Length: 128
Image (tube, rainbow, N blue to C red):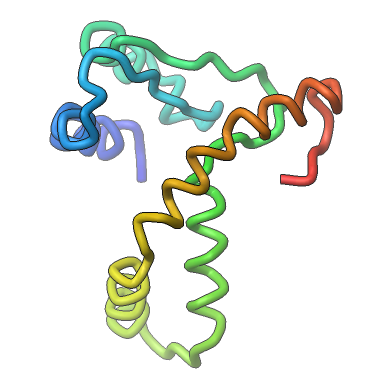
């Protein structure tokens, strides 16, 4: 994925997702320092379309809860013997659909504890 594809995803989904979650107008977008998140075209769009962005220091611990979702999906994928992209795609879609909303809620609710852990560890490695 490059900056243009990523920006297209945001344009098509961010406002609708915020609306669906009931947080339109008062959410903050959390991004790491991936080059597509720091590209000028992205930063300009976000400036005009997001109520706020959480700034992440370089080489900071990864606080993004989605990383735990990717890890969960990776574990599920590793349980299978996949031989081609079509099988991988099918399995990812199936496993994603099986994830319960409470799993995501738990990750989001853990953010305050994650932040406290980062402070306690002085921005070093954490248990998360």
